[in-house]
Image 1 (tube, rainbow, N blue to C red):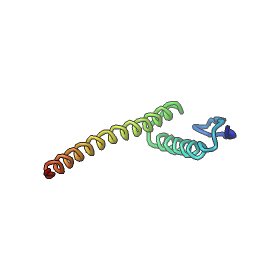
Image 2 (cartoon, rainbow, N blue to C red):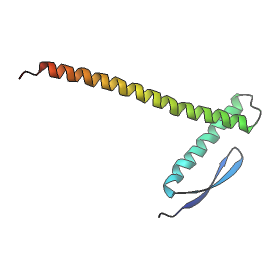
Image 3 (tube, rainbow, N blue to C red):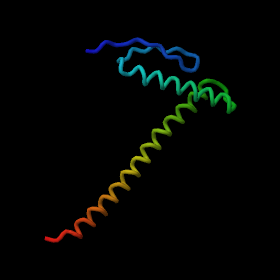
Image 4 (cartoon, helix red, strand yellow):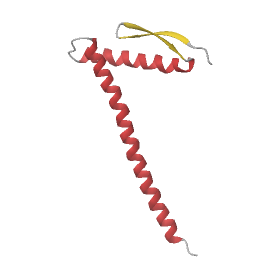
Length: 97
């Protein structure tokens, strides 16, 4: 079993102590940094009442990006499948036995 790493991440003026696998550290620190940057942007550009509003807006932003990537991936997969079927049909129509 790999050794666990204890880190502290600061998000929205709160510190969150975590025990993680060392391989997760870089991703978690980058995620916390991205949340902080986006929260600061929302606070500067929109009238927000409190940190919970800002964090909810951040969560929505990140979740919508993930969902959109899934939608885009599905659409790309369908397009690739259609092209492969057309190519397969073209190749099969040219083969003579």
